[in-house]
Length: 251
Image 1: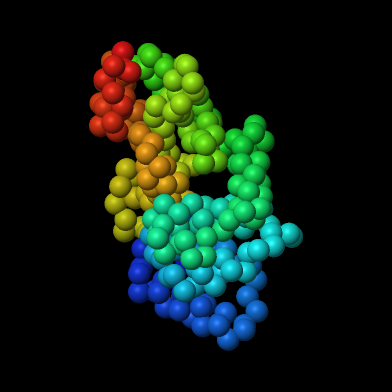
Image 2: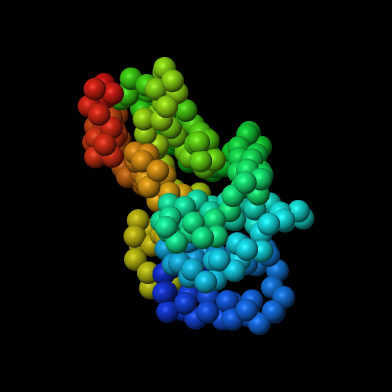
């Protein structure tokens, strides 16, 4: 299931079989590592699949976060956010709360934030991200930052924030090698059509939109094909408008 989630390949029947099997194992007292459990429920959330009995059983085992691997902690926090956003009513029965949630949120932001956690981009992508940021500064009247950490703790490629108050106006994500997976199928379409969005990236964007953020996605390939700076400015303006950014915030 983790491999399916990584490439955002949805197979509801297969995921349900795996979830039923895992839940049955837990119900029968089979010892299953918490790291494996966190990975599986996170994968389900990435694929938009929710198995309430399994989720309740897994989260019920997470009262003690000691000795949990960092990746498992991050997946557990993102699972909590997904359930809170997309299964709010049913999640109330077994929601992570109190000191456990406080500790989890704190560790997540610590692990995801800071210079040491910045996404390492390929040189060409690094240059392109900088170019998009520079163009954004021409298009909007607000501040533009790269490798921004949102209030939820998610790192995003670029963010447009108000100069006063620092509230987020829009989030700009760039689709490239760091967010896409290339198909290894020789019969797949040529580049430009043979990529899949990573499951974790899709989950992040869905959660940000659910929280009310205006999310804009720019393709590296499309950006490079727009050689003219005016076309690039027009593209960003159009995407920002479609994402709900008020016209008065654009230049």
